[in-house]
Image (cartoon, rainbow, N blue to C red; front, top):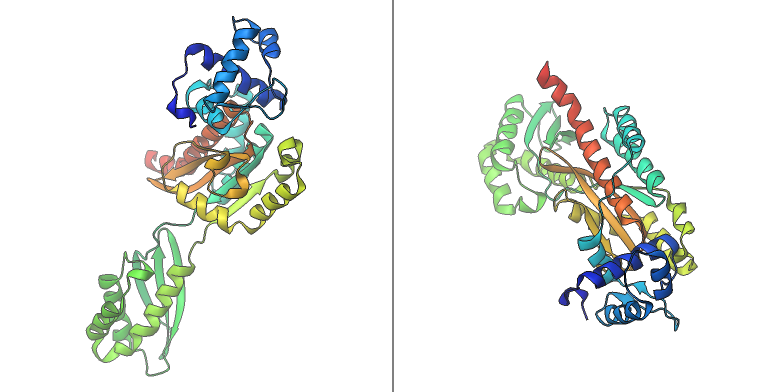
Amino acid sequence: MSGGEKVLNERKKAILKAIVDAHIAGGEPVGSKFLTQNQQIGCSSATIRNEMAELEEMGYLEQPHTSAGRIPSEAGYRFYVDQLLDRYNLTQSEIEELRGALRQKQNELDAIMQTAVTLASKLTNYTALSLRPRQARITVGRFELMRLDDTTAVLIMLIGSVVKTKYIRSNRAAIPPEAASLLAGVLNAKITGLTAGEITMPLIMEMERMMGEYDYLVSPVVRAVCETISGFDGGDLRFEGINRLLAYPEFYDMDRLREMLALFEKKDTLLEVLSDEAHQGDRVQIFIGRENLVKVMDNSTLVFKTVMQNGKPVGAIGIIGPTRMNYRRVIATIDSLSKGIAETIDAPKRRGDES
């Protein structure tokens, strides 16, 4: 039964929160005796046992052994994250460490992200990741064609803020200066803002009609455009602190650990999933256990936040750890780091505006 289908009273909420906190701290099943001795819950041991049994029936707790101890289920962790989690505030020294390290790297996004992911792993003691997401829609914003000699030209394409070039060689006939100028105009008029899949055969035929006697140039140029768009910016995914997984019993199973390491090494599956998530906005996203879209991560939690610039995702940072991770600290760290990255990459622009 889904935990979201039941409403918890305040006592059940307090007991569930106490169990999650204790399990995160110790990694062991939590029993009623521990709660009465170590938590501020004004109930008898018998009452707590009854409440724990009901929480188990509702799907928030699980009993891994025949002992009286319980551990949170995925639904329990989800309820904890959504409704019971106290805000964690980074210490002033932690905040200064984040800001100082990011300021030193403010001229290059890749360097900033690498600094951020190293700090994230260090501050949380979990595996951290940085993402440069695959673009959801890759198009050329402007074309220029520069003639080099009678049969060779350079096609210049502006994709976002990145300039890509391709050499165009004509084996059929020469490339007159007027043909290069005309072709640049046709490209800008007809295929700027289009993805490779949107450049259709009827559109190519229309461009050939517009080129007149120079129609032989359209096919090689369009082929070069489609190759560039298709191969552009496949994204990047980097990890820091993978060895930190070994600190947690959840990853002691060697078969499971090998699957996780293979996922980190191949990257493609996780890169595709995270790129999709990066385009969903800049809120902190939390995927607990089987909520993860990658099956091998069904005993893990991923906390993830996109870094935005000018309303577009330019990167993301995240933490991967066991489901019993320290959610308060991880969420605060990821939130602060992502904001710090956004402020750092905007700093040169703000300084330019002030001058």
